[in-house]
Length: 273
Length: 358
Image (cartoon, rainbow over all chains, first blue to last red; front, side):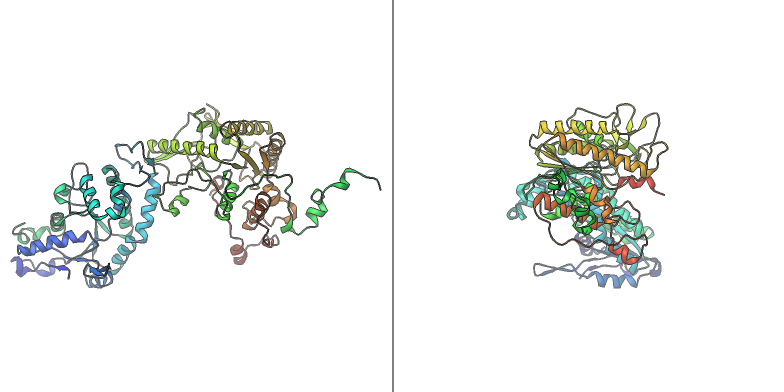
């Protein structure tokens, strides 16, 4: 089951008429897990969460992961009104595919409008716009289609939450690889330079912003407090793997959702966080 | 009956027997062509847009089409293709003139550095004046452009030093060059980038002696870095899209340009043992096919024509390619859906077309 924790006036004691409070549904892939964990934590503290969060249901190695099919979620969103909000955490890890494990032919790229660090001198330079094309193609065929379906399914506001930025700590990623991918040879390849990971994440974000803009979908960046001065995910928000954030990050997302979409309800919604 | 030299000549020396009296698809105008390639021969290509056809056929023929700058494998194949990796053996884009080829060679070896190095077309759009359409959308910064150019020229050096056969399709004699240092551009500044300035650029229509001079210099340079390299020259049958020659008609200017190139190619073949000529131009433009190898725009070469060229190329260079030819259609000036579908043009992007854009 999804973390279907919705705000009820009776839970919070708020005197706001229910009809004025938007319903907020969240759906995503693996990155939505952080939010679901945060909702669980809130439940443990009897603190309401502003969203009902669902993770894509899929079969992997004979077991089910997630709690709702995309089609079922679309059906749910059809019942929402224009005052309601659908949050997407669909996809978001394509950048990691390109940039987490060191490629056998090391490469780097220049990003537009970015002050150096310049690309690694020993690496092959790949033109930015070629990478952008590859990302745009991949995203438009994949997540772009899902976002489009979402936009078409509902009259509610649709907001796509950009995935957490990469982690700067190579040792953290390497340790995870050695634990989980030693047999695949991934560990021996090493980890890409952190700057490359950050540039790929930024590239992906730009492409997604463009796709969302064309679809009439708003974009929400990762919570600023979870991001360090250089743009990486702060260490305290690392999940124990190479690319995901933890429940504390999910809590940051929940707070940002409350701040952004339910500002008038904030005082009554949080009693402990 | 007296004896005379024509009595002992082969059939291909006679117009009636080898042109007028032969089915168009069977016309084979190849004269002396003794170069042989096999599956291991590294064949590199460059030239005008017609050279793209040669590259395309080599790629799918199972022969060793040599790509020295294939693009990084992190890029999907479709992206690399759309970003002009593999279009030619290195990502130099169309090389229309002999001067452009020679200057590319000199640039690759650091002996010529044009003063005009970057064209800025927007906040984060930078074009390489010597291959302005090669990177779709341009480069995002001057630094990226220069880094990519360094890689590109390194790939060009590697290509020249390791190829076995270099196929170069001569396209044009007309070009624009810098008044500052004589560097020539593949397309007139201001058309696909840059800004035209008559004080900076001048029109230059290469006379035959200049073409021969450039090709000879290139051949000598190539022989220095790769003594066993063989060269095949062809002449593009694609007419000029426009002429900048004062007072000239584009048809006459085309005839002049192609004549110069054809003479230069023949002169090179006669002078140098490692230079060969393949008559792509004659196969497409020959009256025997009654214009059937051109699309209704009388410029674009249809797939049937390319297939004829490449069939003969394979036959003479490899001993293969004797499968039945695609029948030639009658020339027509009408367009209909069927013909449009049947005459599907090859997906070749010619920079030149930009000259005639609405």
